[in-house]
Image 1 (cartoon, rainbow, N blue to C red):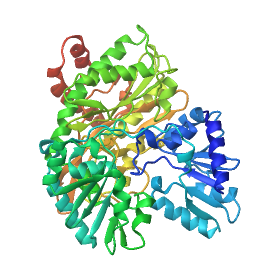
Image 2 (cartoon, helix red, strand yellow; image 1 turned 120 degrees about the horizontal axis):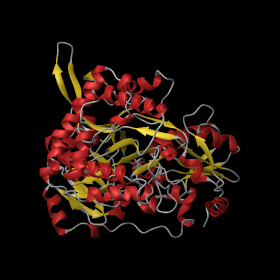
Image 3 (tube, rainbow, N blue to C red; image 1 turned 180 degrees about the vertical axis):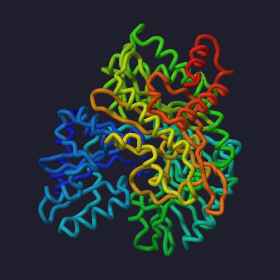
Image 4 (cartoon, rainbow, N blue to C red; image 1 turned 120 degrees about the vertical axis):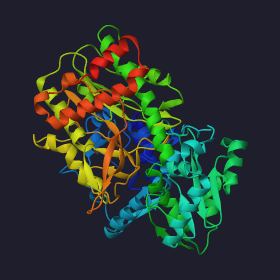
Length: 589
């Protein structure tokens, strides 16, 4: 079916159920950013493939709300769908609830699937709709519309050994229980997949590029249950987690089990799905607090930090070989954005313990580089030759850690304005890299450091500057961030984050420079404990697009010092023509 035909089928179902507006969030029951194939409802309906965004459908209108990362991509994918783009966060774009109210009359029924709706969204919807004399209803309409929905994965759940995890399951559960007790909780629901995987030192492959599996954890002060498809758990895995006091129950029994809880104080994260809240709200006390393990997971222990540094060597070698291949073969052999991403995967696959990409590679040639989360398709992706610029944002999942790196570079002649913009973005990366900041600092307080070189020219970028990164887990990990929006989570030693300022000139070029950085203690003074960043990523920047006169001596020194470190660590692992090219790449500016 086309998107228009799918919309028509949905509207028929809406009419049959007396529903005036239906919201399709980009979500699964675990509210992750990346979804199992069977839960990509918004993508199935609209054709829009971005990781963020939701669709609202009324009897005669439909709209997609998404953020600045997808303002260029969304119109292309929505073309002919009958769904309008609403640029979320831009002046003049209505809040989606206000839009629903304006498009419906008093007494109307607005529906969502509570199983894939965050509790926080439900509460906001319910409050505003009730105030405007409209009714919110749980109604999973797409179950009757998406009739060929893919079957859930049967991939095996496997162990993340203690030498890589750095902490036992028993110790993690004990630490979480201490936090539960301090909050007055007797029971705790863990529904986010990376938190489930981290807590139990398990991994899986139910979600593309994310080593997680579908499961819930129900933790009391005495017991711990993992609800999972039991066919996916080997005897070895079951025996290991049993030793930590974890019992396995079938995934489909989770909500039945919740309904048996009475007079408990249950700690649930506000971004858990509404069905969880509905199952326990009448007979229990609910404590809405972030998952305690979420912050624990973000602070990497010594074993996890060692894992990151180990995989950076392998990833750096793969990237150098790839960059040499691409810059020397563009224009000589036929290639396109998609085939380039596949070639990069091949170089990474040569590395030890490589499992796969940490996200679908973003290979944006010339104007496509301005599409921030562009994903080239096997058919119809842009041909790449030896002129203009290319942006490559990619990452790998290795058993010891996760990588995420972006390099923007020329394949031929580029404009002076491109070089200036590339230099401004690089200056931003450097200014964040050399920052020193006191304990208690939030990401929003550092964000301006990366943007200032662009701001001075009246330029900016519509994405965050930094996100957390998992340890052989999700490439996008919270709760910390570095971005314009206020996030109350303090930056702490042990957190691994991205550093990725950019600039995007629509239909002309995109620029992003990205390294991963580790927060570590710098020194303690009479004022406070101060932190600094250690750069983990090992890969040259392209000096040919740097305007040296725009760089301060401090910035030049940082580039030279960084390249010297890259040379010392990667040089012994390279040989032949690749090494000779690499040595020139890392020579002093």
